[in-house]
Amino acid sequence: MKTIFNKIITKNIMNFDRCDVISQQIPFVNKPCYLYVHIPFCKVLCPYCSFHRISFNENEAKHYFKALRAEIRHYHKHGYMFSDVYIGGGTPTVAPSELHETLILLRSLFPDCKISVETNPDDLHDDILNILKNAGVVRLSVGVQSFDDDLLQQMGRYEKYGSGEKTIARLKTVQGKFQTLNVDMIINQPNQTKYSLQRDIDILMNLKIDQISFYPFMVPESVRTKVLRTMGVTNQVRLRKYYEIILNNMVPAYKASSAWCFSRNSLMIDEYIINCDDYIGVGSGAFSYVDGVMYSTTFSLKQYISRIECGLSGITRKKVLTLKQRMCYDFIIKFFGLSLDREYIMRKYGLKFWFMMFPEYIIIRMMGGIRNEGRLFRLTKYGMYLWIRIMSEFFNTVNTFREKMRLQID
Image (cartoon, rainbow, N blue to C red; front, side):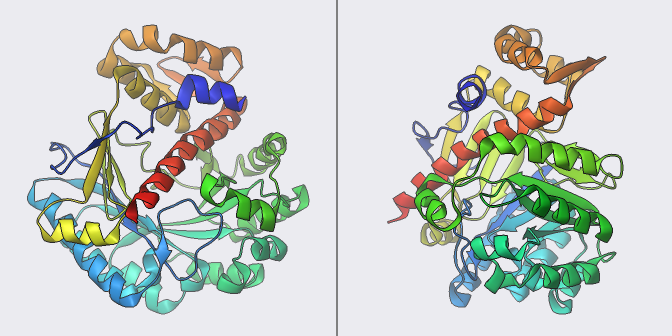
């Protein structure tokens, strides 16, 4: 199944091997779009994490945040309008005063934007929560991953963030402070059991968490050997059974807003790429997608700061997607949000979409992953499972690019 997905869906969409080196500004977007803000710092680096992150250094972070705010001003000066802002990392809350100044800037430049911020359990205390609340953050996303102490120890999170019981107590204090409280969980870890997964789900539902995101366990190639040694081998065959447990428990109390995100309300969802055709990424190691072109900022903090000081953006790489790749991208991302709108596709591509994407569509349809509902094509329950596998492959290609970009820093 992995080979099929890689061949018919994800191959080459995020392949930057043949990308261009650039220094110019991204083409202007004359409509509101999403802004992703990347904070790469973490106090301790989780061994399995594939995102661009580095060990926290207070002085380095101070210079980085200064450059980050300058880049945000850069886009505002060029007329960009951001309706939603997603701040991820790394750990965005690792430097509270710098984050506060950045949030105030965002609120002043884009007063109507909805802001989402990621954090970890150890930062769920009043000093940081009040900064986020007073700055108008509407969605707080907490990386919990599991409440199972054995799994937390294997992931290297127990000593950093405390036991599952401590995290439960912290989450209780946050309830009601923000419009949406999201909790990130990792499923199908090597030593996770059905009992452990069910216990995690029961805890979250008893807490009445607003939104829960269940990410499949994904390990980048660069740390795979270390993860295999410390955590063991994950069982991909088991993933479907675990996903069925999630679906059986979530519905009807929660409604799926993406293949792996479940919400009690209709506020901001976790994957900002679903709802907006174009998005801009600022900060070292961020991605942008505008008019069928994928852009990447430099992964070198030194180069990033230097570029911003010269009045440039952080963008150093781009890949122009072919028409077929753009269609594949929309096919993947829109179905990740559970449905594909016929009228949207016709406006964007016309009948050419169905000629060029027919092989991919018919394979998924024959596998029982898609059903027809008038103007919408919707994923079936089995289709939702297929899509967490597809998105895992998609993000694996992103992780491969991140590894190559990190190697270029030296």
